[in-house]
Length: 207
Ligand code: TMP
Image (cartoon, rainbow, N blue to C red; front, side, top):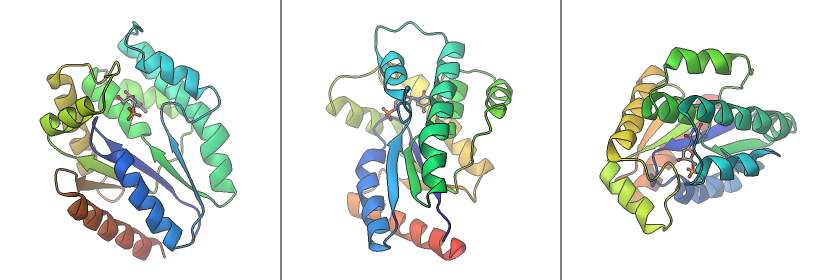
């Protein structure tokens, strides 16, 4: 099978990182070589952009935030995502373009048409599969709090996170063949079962 680009999405504390390990094991069993990466921060200038974007002391307007996220993405795509896909490695990215739509569009309320028009000049590749980890915001934010120091986004009020969740769910209805919703409020075993079924179906459809 040709190399694939898979993205993980969801609100804070939705379990993306925990479930990445399960996805890795699944790919290992199939002898697929892959790289794990993340946004913001996956390209050469990414770590600096990430620390600027997440730092609680940064004062950043919604538009500048969107432009920094898109700059980070272009750097990531050109220097890590495309080179690996071209070498027949799969790329698994913790967050990608749907995060900008959900956070800067839904959360910060920037007009979606403006976000899409700006992104359109960047020639960004579309993921083959997006796993959207979904759960109620109160449960998710409690999990994020347990992890310790809250970043600039995690400190936003509940309404901000609710708009992000709503925006993600609308996106999943708009792109049902690419975005698969995983009910992340279930037990670890149940979430892993959902992932297994989703990955099996993806392999069947692309085999
Ligand atoms: P993380 O904590 O899941 O690694 O993500 C970093 C934060 O950046 C998270 O709060 C979501 C936010 N973010 C955006 O607001 N827009 C984007 O386009 C991306 C990639 C992340």
